Image 1 (cartoon, helix red, strand yellow):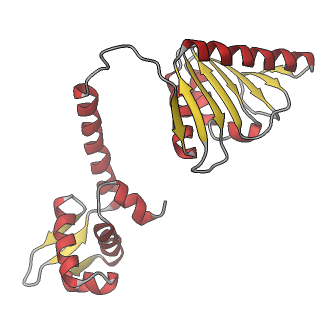
Image 2 (cartoon, helix red, strand yellow):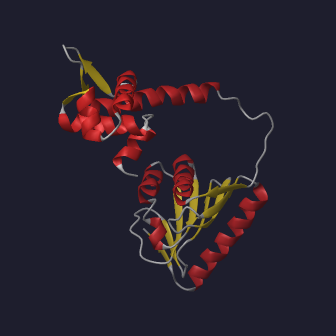
Image 3 (tube, rainbow, N blue to C red):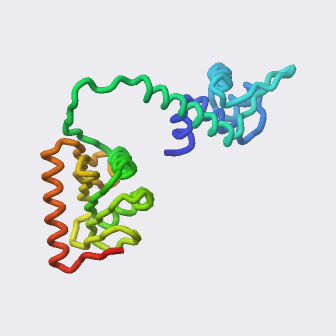
Length: 234
């Protein structure tokens, strides 16, 4: 994502985002000047500037001719995070719980969403995590693995190449890039393939038969690795 797209993720429209960048760069601008430097039609610029003030991205500087100045980027980001924390707390508190236990097979599509799910699975693990993927894919989740190890979580990695993960049990075996499998606490499983594409697809579930199926598959990979002499404790 570029800067404008990131600002839009905070709740600003495209025009408001463009005006925020212009105000950050120029310091103070009248509505006319802001429209001129951004290329936004004047009527739209005035409307967007008013909305930007209302959303906490700019201040109105009173004078014979009203001028606008941006809230500093540090202050704006702090406010966004603070307000988002409040929103998240309300969602957690008020969102209803599922009435009946249900463990569906969930299809997760898109590299970003899959990676987020993998990181969340590792972050929420309490006892153990088994991960099978090539050394290339492990680079995406090194921080999460290190944090899990610090919490005392047992991490077993099945990889195709050299890994620098001190504290993990590592089994080396031939693995094609892209194929991933992960089990956490014998309760959460994710399997599928990734290639940094929006078309990437993985299956996630807490369904016990699937968990057991993937667990057996990982056990077989570990046995194969040990027969090949590919086990390493760090």
